[in-house]
Length: 197
Image 1 (cartoon, helix red, strand yellow):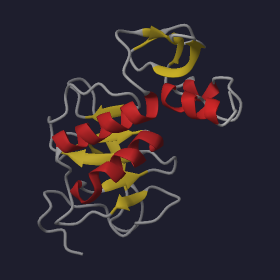
Image 2 (spheres, helix red, strand yellow):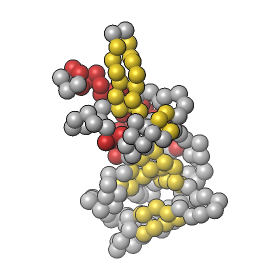
Image 3 (cartoon, one colour):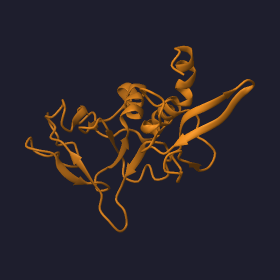
Image 4 (cartoon, helix red, strand yellow):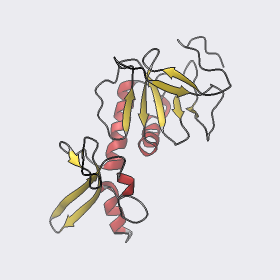
């Protein structure tokens, strides 16, 4: 595989290398559930994607093209004014896990992902996974701290519509005591239908 058309040289096939974000590219990090759904939506329109050992996905995008994104379980990694940010980049030949690897291989024709398309896919995945974004900050049921990334984990059904919604921060959403898995607004109806409620 040739890399001479890339503006940077991927690490040699020895180990993951920490490369500075904001020099050649910025990166968008997405939690596994949101990232995998967005990746399916993007299909052939995705650029190269790194997956770490925890399943988190990282897309490379043009520097400065995603400064004001606000999505749950998604972070834009870029160079900050007062500190450096690094991304662990695996060698080009690492295309399978369980360690960090290229989930979508890097190549001259598959490098950066178009930021607008990526944001649209991630926003769609966010809505599908967690339901509509609530207005303003919400309190997490567990830590009782306000969060800008409120994830609905339960809804109290009322006869004439939706009742009180219980929110959690991304850290505590998986801990919500609903049995086997956390319930979101989008999965509550399915849980009720399947008798898991």
